[in-house]
Image (cartoon, rainbow, N blue to C red; front, side):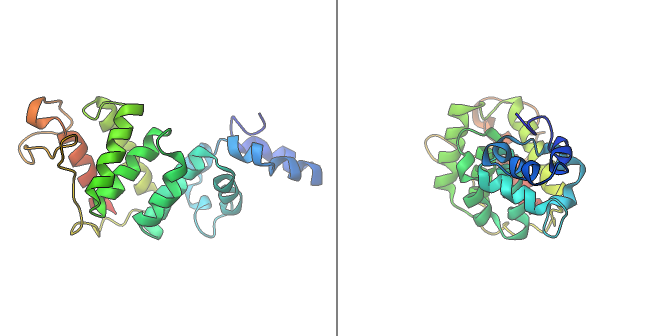
Length: 203
């Protein structure tokens, strides 16, 4: 598939003329195009006013899973997490990072019931909420948000509300140990809680 390895390989096709331009902008190509190198090595260029912004948004519109994920995180900083949730919805529940991000963003705006639903979907489709994978994915979310220019102003501190229901319970160990260490019993959601707190803090 054209562009599946990296969007960089599309440059030569674009230079081939109108037919090349048309091929590159086919929805099937935009949907499968690997935008990760664009986001990782030219982050500012996918943001508003950037060189790759127009092409990147076309990938989002075409349903490119990774483009939707990155655009959702960018929107959380520029517009707000409510818009981010809307953008990320097409990826839920199949894309793990998007599903986790939406759950965390619901925590940030105080919608603990929706957050609980998303975390349950994440656990059913991807990883245990107490697993090492949660820590790794939380770190990825933080790093991506930081790379997009996260302001670290804790704008959602007042509305932050972690679920506390029959399925997803707030941890009873809010202070006193390293959340990257696995604990059982009342500590089982400590990792997820602190990841939510960290994300809220940097927004």
